[in-house]
Image (tube, rainbow, N blue to C red; front, side):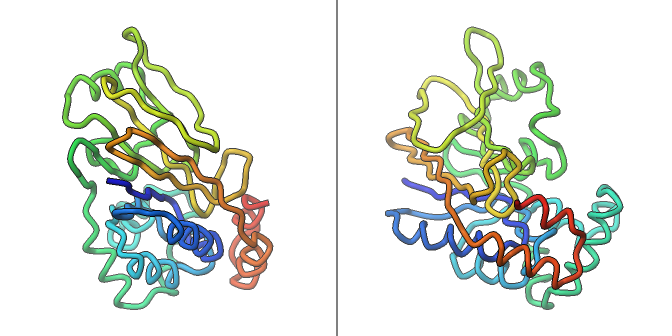
Length: 241
């Protein structure tokens, strides 16, 4: 089975459409979205509709949760809270209802999908987890692979000779070892924070154990102009430059 895995679109329609065009050129069995379809970007409604049209299986991100819970919104910093309120006003009742249906995680075969950190956190960041906590996750044996998002930063975490190893993922293909466990951060479609502003997504082949890391160019300036037209904070445009 070959799955496309994308995360953190953040209302960036141009980045999402570029990724969708690339996905349609692939021979895939499904698409998984790791949450945060919305927030920061200017087109949250169109992105949610696009995700649904792509027939993605989608998990709850913290930005979707902020629409549904005052507690989740209060977890954000002030600027993100204000943007969450603005984003909510741009969404249809149908899209808000859809966000309420999203599960906190998906478990498919030997693979686990969650926005923040396994098994079901939408808020915890991978980079904040201690080696001891990661070792405990690997020892729990609930899954062999864990795909996460939330940090906007592509990363591969594994365990070798009893030590937790963390390394960045770069464009291209890697083959994972079937006798090891991994946490894989899928980066971000709409707001990467790894120094390369192209949209990022993954393709996972669970038979070959191959992982493709794809970097997709898109019209960044168009998105920036739309952010400014919305009156959103300049930092949301600057992050894309």
